[in-house]
Length: 276
View 1 (cartoon, helix red, strand yellow):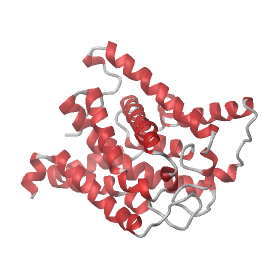
View 2 (cartoon, rainbow, N blue to C red):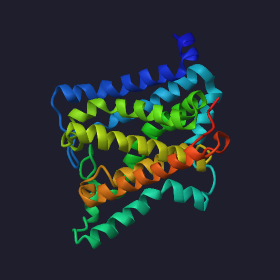
View 3 (cartoon, rainbow, N blue to C red):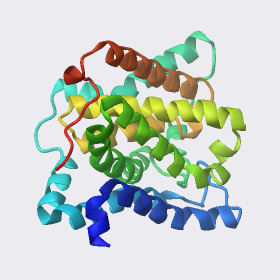
């Protein structure tokens, strides 16, 4: 088994990440559970699958030294620069634009408490929700997807193809949740394939850029992921806010892809250093 993992670390990681997450999610699907903002049913344990898989595969392939390198990428080791903050907290700028758009369109501004009604969590204070989302959505996913897989896939397929291959893996990992997360259940097939699929691809491209500009910091990717999800997976995100913030990510991703098309490979804005 260890020999296979060492020869095929990405395959082993993907299989283990899916297995760990789906072991929690498939029972939810089979019993007809519904995950809603502010509800009592949660899918949060399954969100840790990619992170656990990353540490297991790194331990098997690189030993304690590799685990230490991955852990260091999870920690904010120095005072963050302005650029670090601008990239890792950019979803807050999208939220400001969304609130302005809602005001212009004469749509009601959601109360602050609605940002604390997060899919898969009971009604909690906003700081507690943010901390849990940062831990489970942020670190739970980004330690695996961006901390482990992205650099290796880019090394194999190149900056853009590697990023998009990861987007497909990331999208597929969500599959069981389409049947029990209420936000996904309300989408039609066309919206899931189009809106969700494009959103995942756009998010993967933008997160690759975030890592590129923060020296491969998983902390930065987790912070971006957590703050973005507050604008897309809460009661407050329904309507204008979710539409505007998602559009901002898609536009940013589109601009990055256009730049990549015209930029030499050695000057890629998406490439990150692969952990070795």
